[in-house]
Image (cartoon, rainbow, N blue to C red; front, top):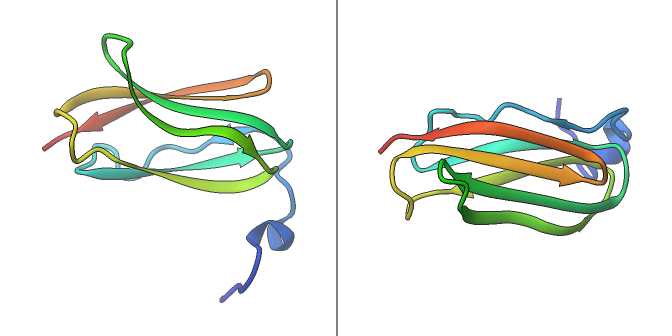
Length: 101
Protein backbone atom coordinates (compact mmCIF):
# COMPACT_ATOMS: atom_id res chain seq x y z
CA UNK A 1 0.00 0.00 0.00
CA UNK A 2 1.35 3.40 -0.97
CA UNK A 3 -0.17 6.45 0.67
CA UNK A 4 0.66 9.83 -0.83
CA UNK A 5 -0.11 13.03 1.06
CA UNK A 6 -1.03 13.79 4.64
CA UNK A 7 -1.21 10.55 6.64
CA UNK A 8 -3.34 12.25 9.30
CA UNK A 9 -6.16 12.71 6.80
CA UNK A 10 -5.84 9.03 5.82
CA UNK A 11 -5.73 7.63 9.35
CA UNK A 12 -7.71 10.35 11.10
CA UNK A 13 -6.88 11.86 14.46
CA UNK A 14 -5.79 9.50 17.25
CA UNK A 15 -8.33 8.81 20.00
CA UNK A 16 -5.76 9.30 22.75
CA UNK A 17 -2.28 10.57 23.57
CA UNK A 18 0.38 7.85 23.20
CA UNK A 19 4.15 7.46 22.97
CA UNK A 20 5.37 4.32 21.20
CA UNK A 21 8.41 2.36 22.27
CA UNK A 22 11.61 3.74 20.82
CA UNK A 23 12.98 1.78 17.88
CA UNK A 24 15.65 0.56 17.96
CA UNK A 25 16.31 0.43 21.69
CA UNK A 26 19.14 -0.15 22.63
CA UNK A 27 20.40 2.06 19.81
CA UNK A 28 23.52 3.50 18.20
CA UNK A 29 23.59 6.36 17.26
CA UNK A 30 19.91 7.26 16.62
CA UNK A 31 16.45 6.09 17.62
CA UNK A 32 12.90 7.06 16.63
CA UNK A 33 9.70 7.52 18.64
CA UNK A 34 6.15 7.71 17.35
CA UNK A 35 3.92 10.20 19.10
CA UNK A 36 0.12 10.23 18.80
CA UNK A 37 -1.57 13.49 19.77
CA UNK A 38 -5.34 13.64 20.11
CA UNK A 39 -5.36 17.44 20.55
CA UNK A 40 -3.54 20.41 19.07
CA UNK A 41 -1.34 22.21 21.58
CA UNK A 42 2.04 22.77 23.11
CA UNK A 43 4.27 19.68 23.15
CA UNK A 44 7.58 19.28 24.94
CA UNK A 45 9.87 16.33 24.15
CA UNK A 46 13.08 16.36 26.17
CA UNK A 47 15.90 13.88 26.82
CA UNK A 48 17.48 13.58 30.28
CA UNK A 49 20.47 11.63 31.56
CA UNK A 50 20.30 9.46 34.71
CA UNK A 51 21.29 12.46 36.83
CA UNK A 52 18.19 14.32 35.65
CA UNK A 53 20.17 16.78 33.53
CA UNK A 54 18.59 17.95 30.28
CA UNK A 55 20.72 16.67 27.39
CA UNK A 56 18.53 17.34 24.33
CA UNK A 57 15.24 18.92 23.30
CA UNK A 58 13.50 17.18 20.37
CA UNK A 59 10.40 19.40 20.36
CA UNK A 60 9.18 22.40 22.32
CA UNK A 61 6.29 24.17 20.65
CA UNK A 62 2.83 23.79 19.17
CA UNK A 63 2.01 20.61 17.30
CA UNK A 64 -1.14 19.58 15.48
CA UNK A 65 -3.18 16.58 16.54
CA UNK A 66 -2.14 13.47 14.64
CA UNK A 67 0.78 11.10 14.27
CA UNK A 68 4.37 12.36 14.53
CA UNK A 69 7.75 10.63 14.34
CA UNK A 70 10.67 12.10 16.25
CA UNK A 71 14.29 11.00 15.83
CA UNK A 72 17.08 11.52 18.33
CA UNK A 73 20.63 11.49 16.95
CA UNK A 74 22.83 10.83 19.99
CA UNK A 75 26.13 10.48 18.11
CA UNK A 76 27.72 13.18 20.34
CA UNK A 77 26.48 11.61 23.60
CA UNK A 78 28.16 9.10 25.92
CA UNK A 79 26.91 5.51 26.16
CA UNK A 80 24.39 4.95 28.90
CA UNK A 81 20.78 5.21 29.95
CA UNK A 82 18.63 8.22 29.07
CA UNK A 83 14.99 9.13 29.60
CA UNK A 84 12.66 10.81 27.13
CA UNK A 85 9.84 12.86 28.69
CA UNK A 86 6.91 13.95 26.57
CA UNK A 87 4.41 16.52 27.86
CA UNK A 88 1.27 17.58 26.01
CA UNK A 89 -1.32 19.44 28.06
CA UNK A 90 -2.07 17.22 31.07
CA UNK A 91 -0.56 14.15 29.37
CA UNK A 92 2.93 13.01 30.35
CA UNK A 93 4.88 9.96 29.15
CA UNK A 94 8.38 8.85 30.14
CA UNK A 95 10.44 6.17 28.49
CA UNK A 96 13.89 4.66 29.10
CA UNK A 97 16.43 4.71 26.24
CA UNK A 98 19.76 2.86 26.14
CA UNK A 99 22.60 4.22 24.01
CA UNK A 100 25.30 1.60 23.35
CA UNK A 101 28.37 2.61 21.38
